[in-house]
Length: 191
Image 1 (cartoon, helix red, strand yellow):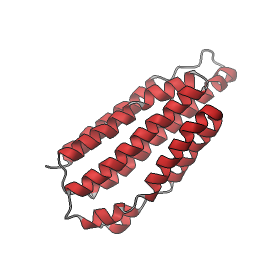
Image 2 (cartoon, rainbow, N blue to C red):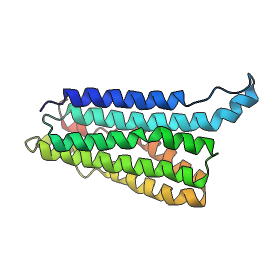
Image 3 (cartoon, helix red, strand yellow):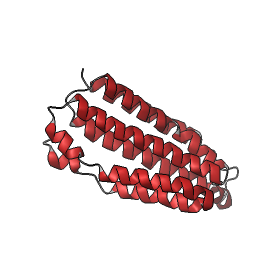
Image 4 (spheres, rainbow, N blue to C red):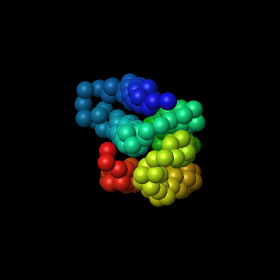
């Protein structure tokens, strides 16, 4: 089975997710700085979610670029990832509109946990579907950064009920951690 349709479908779904997020942003009620400042938390939450979708898309792109073969298990794992990412607009709206209340802030962590687990499952499915691709298996390796992100999201879930701003700090920290490019695949493969 080829990977072209999987890549195209994934790109399309991720573009729709970002479109839904931006369409949910409301224009400030008044044409003044105070109204724009009141919208700042929602805009910041949107920027964080945009970055998160971009991070998953970027890593997904690199991994599929290095993949030679996929199967049904890969397709289902990919759908699980896309499902979890499709929940981001709901979580971000709830978090922003509730002024970052504990439960909505925790729901954002839950979505990111689900996305992280789905991404790790996708990596495993790809490696299993393409056992001859030892270079990809080596490049993915122990997946330290992905597992650390998952652990931090779990911590953020708990922190959201104690101090929601601390959970948001963890979300920003993990996103910042991923802005440092993950060169495992690029450095281990001639892609």
